[in-house]
Amino acid sequence: MMSQQSIPLLLIDAGTGNLHSVFQTLRTITDQIVISDKPEDVLKAGRIILPGVGAFSGFMQGLQQRNLVDPIHDFIKKGNPLLGICVGMQAFFDYSEENGNHKGLGHLPGFVQEFQNMPNLKVPHTGWNQLWFRVKALLLQNISPGDYVYFNHSYYCVPENPGDIAATTDYGIDFCSIVQRENVYGVQFHPEKSQKVGIQVLSNFVNLGRKS
Amino acid sequence: MLAKRIIPCLDIKDGRVVKGINFVNIRDAGDPVDQARVYNEEGADELVFLDISATAFGHETVVHVVREVANQIHIPLTVGGGIRSVEDMRKILLAGADKISINSAAVLNPEIIKQGCALFGSQCIVLAVDARKTQTEDAVTNKWEVFINGGRKPTGIDVLEWIKQAVDLGAGEILLTSMDRDGTHSGYDLELNQAVSELVNVPLIASGGAGAMQHFADVLSIGADAALAASLFHDGQMKIRELKQYLAKLNLPIRLA
Image (cartoon, rainbow over all chains, first blue to last red; front, side, top):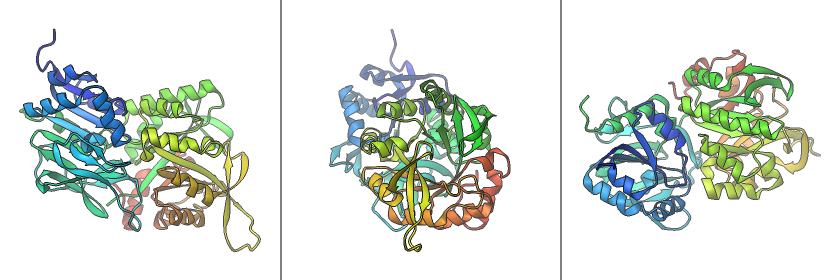
């Protein structure tokens, strides 16, 4: 029998995304990773990564169909670290405007909207762009302002509470590229595709709260 | 600021990197994982794998190549060649690719763009276009024709009209190859790239014709978001790191890793 928190690091499979790259990148940091879509595993996890690609509504449906929504809320209440990647980050907010209005997990006040057409700013926002820090977040240890990470998205998060914004990125506007409220972290970029800087972000997350 | 991307392209046949001009004189050029690692260390911003296998078995092997590269190298991967269905897309994405490039299949069945975008998102679907300049009556306006099947088959379709249609269907990026310039090392087709950049508001990868560092600067200054080259990098004629330093000195936004 597995005891409470018998899964050090859980990678949630919502059925839409490609977990392979995230898993392989995490393996360079730790070998104690479990991939699962089972609600019971969520509450056994010490920390969770929620990767997401594709459309917001499909991702939320994937969580709902697997009965993962309530366990994720319960997990957050316990205070353990949770990291959302890309659409996984967007899911923390109240709703997204992608293909109509779709409800998110509603843990962070705010919403998700599309980049507006601006001259010379193409959508999707694809490629390497820079991180600028709002706060000294633990997730940003050993990362420098101006470091590049890889983005590939058309929608971005608009947190209602400016205090939830840990880092921004300039793409016509300064959009929220890292969000943090207490134990809940989200990154709009793909750390698993961002070479050394990305591995550092993931490593910071895996080592949160651990004394080195 | 979003950086301009430098993208090496690897032609893959039956799981091996091959080199050759215009699909002739193809020769083995090594293991894709080794090659990908070298480019990653040199500071490539993304890798494009173009599968030119002629058989179903050959196409199967590219899935293994993608998986191996994704396992070892944490860099964005775009994979194209031989993709006929959303199932083909899914297999390659699950193996660790970030984007799928479609060319002939999209021309023959434009709905595949819509289907791919619905399942995986527009940011995942790259439209690859092989373009050749055509003679126009007034000899002033430029026109280009879409070719498919690895550049062997003319379609009679106008490049700009096709790209407009594909973006309306959801394509999230354009990989635009000038067949006139491909392999010539005489520079990218700037008129073609500028026309496409002004036409649609999705990222544009310029391809075909790179031979000197100045060529990259030229095309990245007229609206291309990324510049792709194959043989130039394979043959070691140009080092990606040196190219990126050159471009950064010209004040183009470049990621110097």
